[in-house]
Length: 199
Image 1 (cartoon, one colour):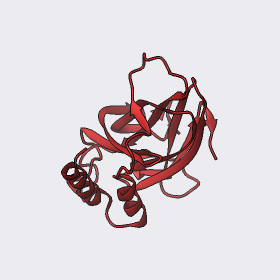
Image 2 (image 1 turned 90 degrees about the vertical axis):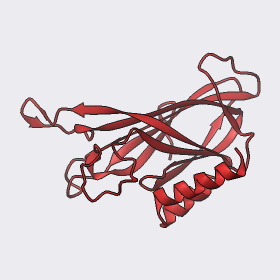
Image 3 (image 1 turned 60 degrees about the horizontal axis):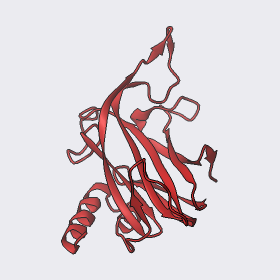
């Protein structure tokens, strides 16, 4: 990536995330310090000795475009693409994921659904496979649109394949005792490696 492209990316991220602490961290982490940590690969390649494969999965559901009239036009909520930022050991990538209309019933057998993604919205599902050297790595996962980020330390061993999953948790409807809903935005992500929660 040349310097002009990097500068444009940093300016664009600055417009998306604003000037808060999380926003500044996301902007900093969007800049690659290295280019040799991982590479995106196809699902069929054999794993060479000394390396491991890591499937990165994450999703978010947002309201449809225009749901909140006061929302800035630049917002990616409900738009065709939504950005996910991943930085592993200093190598960063911003993946723009295509959204799909997603509707789940608000009521099931006359009872309000407790599914936090119930209702009409747009869902974005990130699923990318990368190859990296065996060992311990620091993974930064960020949402420039929110802005939100989390970090996790993972260890991978030679010749093995892993699934690193970021599971969304949404804000509650009105008060903490009420159910979560995607319409209130993301609260946090829980991190799992091969189905085991990372603290």
